[in-house]
Length: 323
Image (cartoon, rainbow, N blue to C red; front, side, top):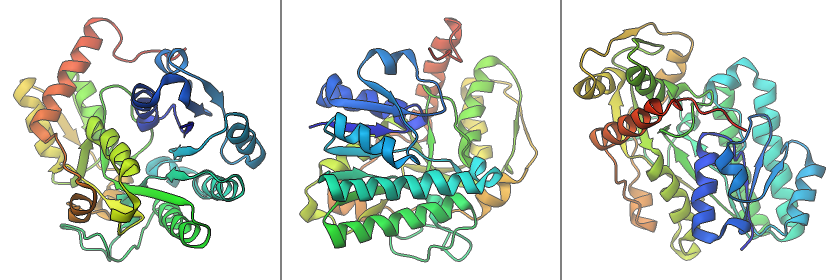
């Protein structure tokens, strides 16, 4: 099986690429990145190409030259960054996906993973235990592009038989890749500040609650969904989550391990985005259809995050420079 990972230099892509190479073989997984430099681990562990997914011709060349059968399409402009440049967000998130779906139809690519987000929800969506099938009323360009992506995936699956699958990811917390412009980045930045012994200024209120997931669960959920028998899936895009906590609860958990850690709360434009998103997610459909079960809660995540960041800090590599 020949796999392409777009957005492979991003927060999820950089780790998912390595997990896929370990599972399916290093030479079988082609990593594709664009603006963000690739890490040494990404470059040394398998094939890498530079690719702008908004360039249809370039995307087609990569798919043909590497005989790609499955695509994990992670290239995207995220929520906070997307509000600063909504035109670019549409071009990458929607046009890039459309190019891929059209090429999949033409070339017979059999499977596409296209992550969605809790950004598809909005003020008219129930904010607690947000159901699988509900109103999608996003207030950000990122959310608009993700709803569009879900609908495009459903259409190409129904009309052309392209097996498109996706997950509505919550905030993702990772110790390996720095944040990439998402509204939930504070959940990662807080850990970095704590390890460095610095106070943190949080851009959302202390009582802001959002669903979250630790990166190992994020990677496993994508691979498990893609390996699930198609006959068991009732949906093209599934709700998934692992935990929900407030910014204040996260700070308190970190303080258990780093006594004296200080956080000041100064909400900015990202507060309005967070307020439009769910506080908790109902992912019972994913649990029933393909056996989704998270392995990390807040306590387990905090312990592993701090241990990993402390090791890097001690080695002088808290912020590793990409090659």
